Amino acid sequence: MPDMCPKCGLPKDICVCDILDRETLKKIHVFTEKKKFRKFVTVVEGLSGDELERTSKELKRILAVGGTSKNGVIELQGGNKDGVRKALISLGYSNESIDVT
Ligand SMILES: [Zn+2]
Image 1 (cartoon, rainbow, N blue to C red):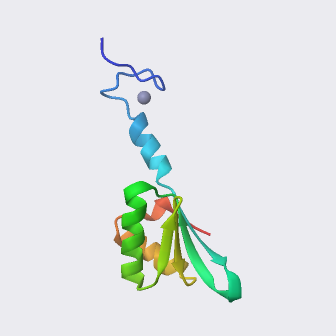
Image 2: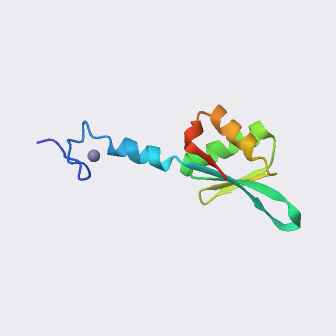
Image 3: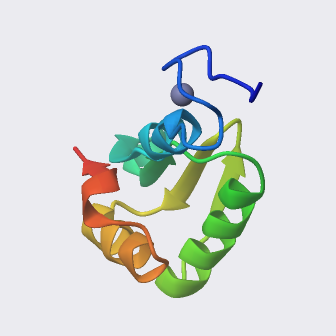
């Protein structure tokens, strides 16, 4: 008797729920926020763990800006949403998974 998925009722071997979950999770939200002294930051939400760290590092390198990453949020200096979107795509994220507002 194979393991059955509690979600779709199919054997775990052919179930795609985990994959779907992962795809759903990988929705990246990019927006700008105004900080003190009229400084802007670009916020990237939707990543976690190692991926958050790695992506943060790569974005800072590609865009040559400073930034921080914590609690699932990357904050990059400057209001460069379009640059961040392009950089994310160059890192392998699909355009559809990136939500820029
Ligand atoms: Zn399933």
